Every structure is written in C-alpha cells, then in structure tokens.
Image (cartoon, rainbow, N blue to C red; front, side, top):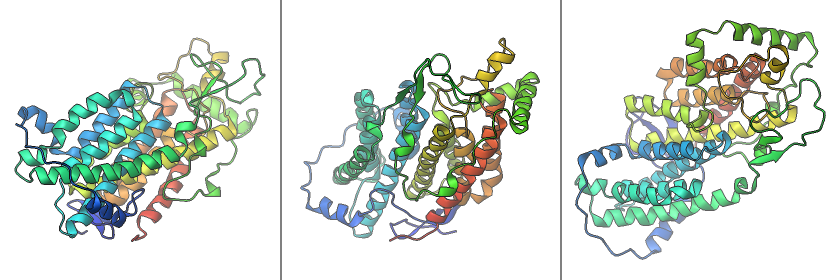
Length: 425
C-alpha cells in the first residue's frame, strides 16, 4: 500500500486502501484544463461570511459523501429509474474524482485551490443537470459547502475563488460529456401493442405499467473506459416448455411457499424499487460505510466512488442489452395463472427478467470494491450473493436470472479491474 498525494499519474492508496493507479475517466486533459484556469481572469474576492450553526457544518466534514447523499436523496424524490440513477451517480462521482485529480496536479505546480469549493461547484452542476427541480436547494447547500475550509482556517477567499473557477471548468467538461452521450435523447418508456399475442415464456408488461417498458434502448449508451465484449451476450434462457425451465418454475414456487420473516426482510432490504436510492445507490451506501471506517484521503476515496459508479453504469448497459434481446417473462405472469392469490414481496419492475440487474451490478461492484479494499472482500461477496438471492425471495426473478447475472457481473468486474490496474498518463 502507498500513501501520500494522488496525481493523474500516481497511485490511489492510503490508510486501509489498496494501491491502484489513479485514473481520470472523462476530464482526461488536466493540463489543458489548468492552462485554461490560469488564463481565466479571477473573480472578485468575497469576504468570508459568518459560519452557520455547528450542525449545518458537520455534514460537510466529508464532502464527497455529503454530495453523494444529496444526489441519492434527489433520486428518491424524483423516482429516478435504476438505469438513469446509475448514470447520474457515475457522472457525479466521476466529476468529483476527475476534478480532484486536476486540483492535485495544480497543487503540485504551486496553485492554491479550495477542494471544498471545487467539489461544491462540480456537484451542484451535476445534480442540477440530473434533477433540474433541485437547483435552488443545491445552491443553498453550495453556499455553505464552499466556505467550510475557510471557516476551519485552512484557506481564504483566494483559494475559494480558485476552487470555484476551476470547478466551473471541470463541470463544463462533465456537462459536455453528459449532453453528448445520447442518454438525454433515449426514450424513458417504450410502448408495446396491447393486443399482440405473446409467446409462452416471453415478457408481458404488468400492472400498473401495461403496454410500457422501461428504457428499452438503454444499451445504446457507449460504455465508459472499457470496450464491449461479445462474451457478455448471455446464452439464451432454456425454452419455456423444456425440463430445465420446468425446474426453474418448481424452484421458484417452492421458495415462495416457504418464505420466512428473515427472507422477506432480505427481499425488502435489497428491493431498490420506486422512490428508493435504487440498487446502485445501495452499493454507494455500502462503500460509504466501509470507506468511513478505512478513512483514506479525499482523492483516494473519490477514486473508489468513481470506479464503482462507472462499473455499475457500464454493467446496466450490458444488462439491458440482454434483457431486451431475450425478453424473458417475469414470474408474476406465470404465477397469476397457477396461483392467482399469490403476490410478490416486492414490486415487479416494468422490463424483462433475464438477467437480474441486482445480481449483475452487485457482482461487478463487489469485484471492484474488493480491488481497493481486499480486506473487505468477504463482506462484499456476501452482499452480492444476498442481493441476487433477494430477487428470488422477492418474487420477481427466476433463480436462473440471478445465477447468470452474477456470472456476467463477475466478468464485467474483472474487465474493469484490468482497466483500473493499467497505468494511464
């Protein structure tokens, strides 16, 4: 393990964190950004305002986590789809991480830049882009966050101004990427003709979203940092009338008939459905908890969040490609014919079943987090297994979806790890 400052060509390490080459994902031209920063006239300096109450300041002891929590709160309030939530968390975590790498390089050149102000500028821009109705609220948070370093005696108005100015340059790079990746043009809902006959074993939309499918074109997004692999196309599920799928149906029904209170609690813990932080947010919360104990330096923590955010965004793009390739039926459609009184523990989402998104992103996230925090590998792997199993318990996935999803997620996670371990200049 290593410690010390992290730069664009250095190592992400520190207390409790494995050394991994530091990486910028989107703002890769830090030299050009710093050149633009030096050529941009400074804004007039403002007097440091009086500090607010202690409680208002305490939230900003860990600014990365504070901004991530605000994004997850916005995801819940706006009922953001899991696909788009993973993208927004990736954009925010990458923006903050890439911005800190630029600031670290500037510091190595003798520049004095407030990281609190830098993060506040970037995060406010990214969260407002993702959820425009939160703009005024985010500006209120920003008004406090930018001055934390000054109130703690670490910097003055000049450093805050520099942080805001550099943050604007980084945020613009991030927004340019966000506007060009095509996600904003993809339809959130796809329509299905209601009178079309559906073949046995093929997905049918369910209440309350009849005739609608969520983000059917999400796989069109380009992957970030890695190339698509033909091996990520899963084998087709067994034929609906085959003995293999008969076993899947039998296992599903037997599982549902003997659910325990602990099973139901696990299903609800990992539900990640409407008006929640979504599965990606659940993994960010796990990372926050573990990193809070390890407490590595700011840039090192940011690198972990960014790597995980990119991994989950990429993984859901691959998952969605397989889902809409195979259009596998959800268990509820079959159960309604054999046991009309049955209800799933958690809400059945409006998109095809195979593979399980929870199982896939959880396996991938566990792999990448284990790269940085190998001492926590057993915990991450168990969380991933729980997340996958919870979907069978919750009544919304066949076990097949979870098994194949976990295998796919592990392969994507391994590819992300190879990329993360490759030094970049």
